[in-house]
Length: 138
Image 1: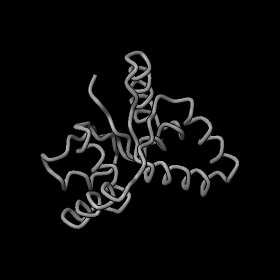
Image 2 (image 1 turned 90 degrees about the vertical axis):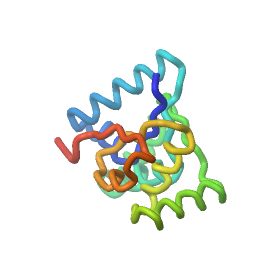
Image 3 (image 1 turned 45 degrees about the horizontal axis):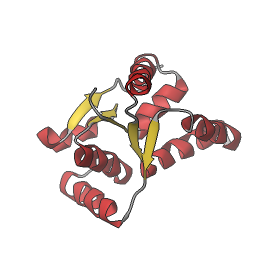
Image 4 (image 1 turned 180 degrees about the horizontal axis):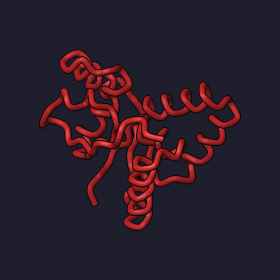
């Protein structure tokens, strides 16, 4: 199985039940469980998911999402100084959003595919393996 890093919008699409995105992430989660290879996510990107769930659905739903995260085969990778510097370099060189630069950095560092619906990652060209999801479908 390929290694995958989830961008915030991939997990939000899963939580929100967006058809194609949710189905693809669900399939990745099943494969991850079966092969005992967790999906990866930067703590910065998890923070985005938590924030969005809180903003849209309230604190209780954000806390439910957090509890559910702990049941999923997803390893949340902390952001240390070295990772933050590499992410900041990507942000500066490729004009990425700050949190997006953490997702890209983690995928590149781990040799993984980045799962995202955000077209801005195409700015990185061939230095990033991108697994694109459809954008904001319901």
